[in-house]
Amino acid sequence: MHEGLASDTAHLTARARAADAVVEPGRRLLDDRFAHLFVTDPPPPATAEEAMTRLRALDGAHGGFLAEILLRQRYFEDVLHRAVADGVRQVVLLGAGYDSTALRNPDLDGVRFFEVDHPSTQKAKVELLGRAGAETPSVTYVPVDFEAGSSLNDELAAAGYDASQRSVVGWLGVSFFLRAESFQRTLEDLAGGSAPGSLLVFDYMDEAVVDGTTPYEGALEMARKVGAQGEPYINGLTPQTASEAAERAGYRTVDRARVTDLVRRYGGDDPYCSDDDFMGLITAERL
Ligand SMILES: C[S@@+](CC[C@H](N)C(=O)[O-])C[C@H]1O[C@@H](n2cnc3c(N)ncnc32)[C@H](O)[C@@H]1O
Image (cartoon, rainbow, N blue to C red; front, side, top):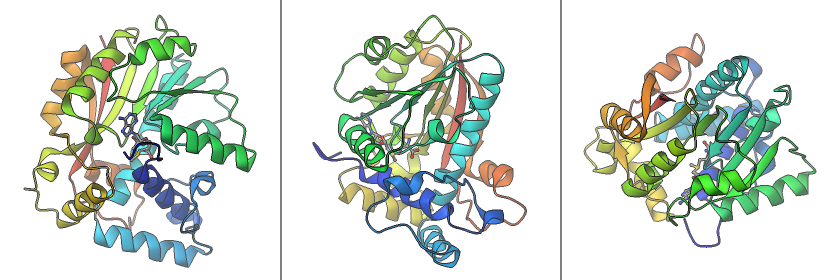
């Protein structure tokens, strides 16, 4: 992240979501009708055809990313809806970027969202929402830099989060940008403020992308691109080490999904996106 500037990769994911929302209805992977609020340059596509052309170009150059960016959100929201049906009323989004879960789910009665993000990205998001006149009464914004060493739990508690009650936490598209020790410290901090039965969903990038040995050229090309923009992938994991990191912090793994699983579950009968498999998700439960 560049000091004082909003995350470029958060904007990249918002661009993909905004384009997906313009694709013809049966082929949309996520359908985030608020993503366009966050997309400034270039503007979102005007037609379904233009949207599909842009998405296919992204998918062709960097197979697997489109599926991960759009479908991890579907996966998370399935976990979220099950947790809410089970009585959970607190949702924490770590590194929320331009996530619109709260806006898209106004029917989640009595659910409080805590959006934690780097102060620069969060400031940009709140300004864009204000400019659009979009209100997010169920959201409390909590600016935190995971690299700065401040206590996530203290910040959440000050914002009204109740550590004695269960929560569901989404940490999507962030782990690979953090130093390994900051990632682990944040996990442990989070575990300390999560009541037993709380759920955490996070995604990870294969170690082989970070160390350059993956066979997926499109992933390496994306790694070079985001690195050049100042947001390098520096923390690679494997399905095993991702689970171990959560387990060291006091969680047990309850589900795993790779890009191929996401495409199979959510991509529809005839998915147009590639399932190059260099990322994965873990759902973990606080013991
Ligand atoms: C690729 S975006 C993902 C955004 C969103 N979760 C999504 O899935 O679209 C990465 C996010 O991580 C956040 N981030 C990166 N480094 C951070 C740090 N040190 N502290 C807090 N947030 C950070 C950025 O601000 C950005 O919102």
